[in-house]
Length: 96
Image (cartoon, rainbow, N blue to C red; front, top):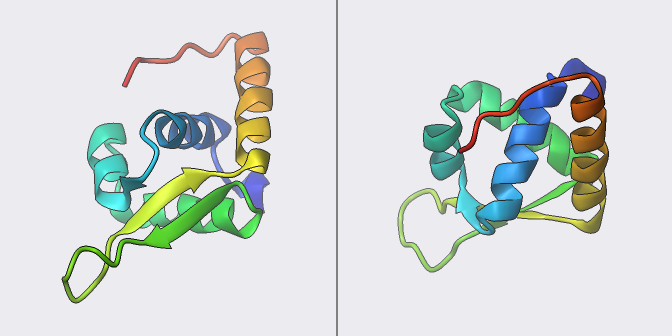
């Protein structure tokens, strides 16, 4: 469930995906400085609840096709709510 996740981290991931549409898991991992295992856990949960759409990039011919990430309408709504909630709680954000 989403409550198992750190809300600030969820916000950072959603914001990054919004600003960098089609970002790969590796790009998100490097920019947000989050372990790949942890990031994958967040991405899977966000995909399960319909906030992120993960699409394989078949144009890249490797054994594993990188996944590109896109926000859904539900993800945009969650991002907006989280931004408001975290600001109300006085959480500050560092620019990425």
